[in-house]
Length: 302
Image (cartoon, rainbow, N blue to C red; front, side, top):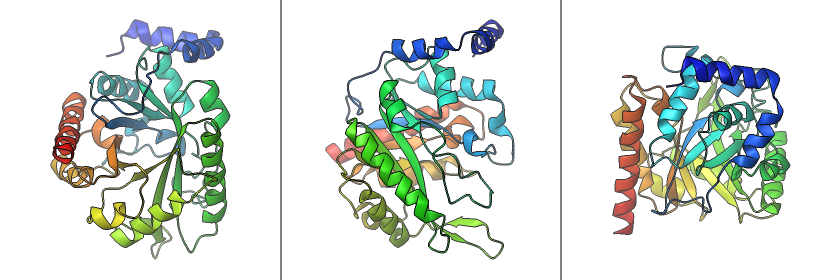
């Protein structure tokens, strides 16, 4: 928990000492490897609010309470099996000021301009970290969202921007985490994720080919019904994303577990499903996900 005193100190620091952010980046103790000693990577995602996506389950404003979000993140990060966080500058910097990111992997979220529900949502502009700031601030990589809608021309500039970001991160020797998601539009114009294995395989193949080199590219993909088809489309390392939480956490865990057994998959990146579980037990949800990852890795490496 963040005490009232610590919360007041954070708000005062934010208002009176902007230079503390630079010092906190410089003082952060990183770690040498993206992968844990077990060869896996488990990250908690917290970049949803910057895209205006605040809802979880039946609560449309769940992630609007920043103190609650930070407390949940700190609880998750206390688990030694959690390797780090994926977030936008504001969230990462709050956690830095709260001393929550030492010896953790930190991935900066880069494009959050495709605001949820906006007419231009697919034209997902880069409004967060860029490759230079990720390198300067000592972060471990950058993440970008790439929603692919064949009927929406907004996909094209996002493709180009993601390719440029992959190339720029590679110049710094930093991970480029690309999240390619195939979508269609329904009769009302709303976006609907295509979860079939063929669509996911196509999306993965497109993302893998972005930029001047794929040496530092990782893919962040939904758990497909047929992991062999979707995940077999590339040799690049992949991470399974949590996605929209289901009402039954055990169903999410089972779905992740199937994909985690594919040899290209190295770990998990999960946000709302772990930070806002139905029973409110963040520590328990994180421990359950860590156990699924550990069991899958042990099975693959046995």
